[in-house]
Image (cartoon, rainbow, N blue to C red; front, side, top):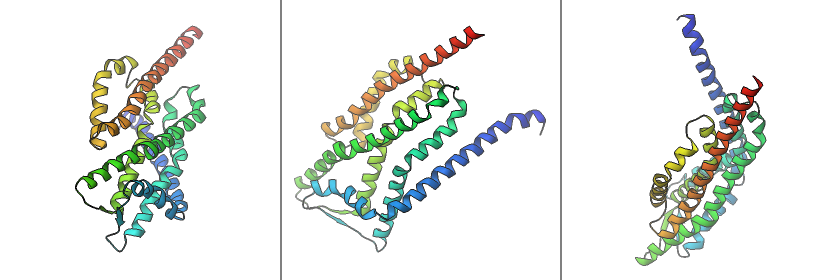
Length: 254
C-alpha cells in the first residue's frame, strides 16, 4: 500500500472506529436501562395492554408458550430501555456527526438533545393517546361485525404496540433529520417545496398501509406527517440561510 492510499483510507477507518464506539456506548446504555425497566415490567405491561382492554371489553389476551411471559418481559424491558436511554443515544449521534459541523453549530448540543428527546416523547405520546385508542376501537368493531369474541396472543399485541409507538417517536424526528440533511446539502428547501405534491401522496399511501382502512385513523397519522413535512421545509430553509450567512461573514473577514 502506498503512502497516498494510506492517507486516503485512514480517515475512513477512523470514521468507522468512531461509529463502532458510539454504537457500543448506545447499546450499553440501552442494556443498562433495560435492567432497570425489567424491575417494573408489570407496570409497563399494564400500560401497553390498557388500550386493548378499553376497546375489547370481551377480548382476552393469552400466552401460547411456557416461556412467553419471560420473553415478553425481556422484550418490554429492551423497548423501555431504548426509550429511557434515548437522551444518551441521541447524544452519541451528536458526537458522531459533530465533527462535520461548524464551530457555532457545535455549541447547539443542548438544544439538539432537548429537541430530539422531546420530539421522540411527543411522537410516542401522540400515538398512545390519539392513534392507538382509535385503531383498537376499529379492530374491536370488526370483530363485533362478525360476532366473534377475540382471543389475542399477548406477544402479538405487545409487538404491535411497541412497533407503533416507536415508529411514531421516530417519525416525529423528521424536522431534526431535515436540518442535518439540509445542512450537508442532501436536500434543499426548494426541492422539498417542489416535491410537496409527491410527498402528500406518499404520506397518505404510507398512512393507509400503517393504519386500519378507515379515513379517521389515516388522517390521524397523515395529519402530523404533513405538519412535520411543512416544518421540515422551514427547518431546511433555516439551515440554508444560516450556512449562507456564515459563508458571507467569512468572506468579509478574509
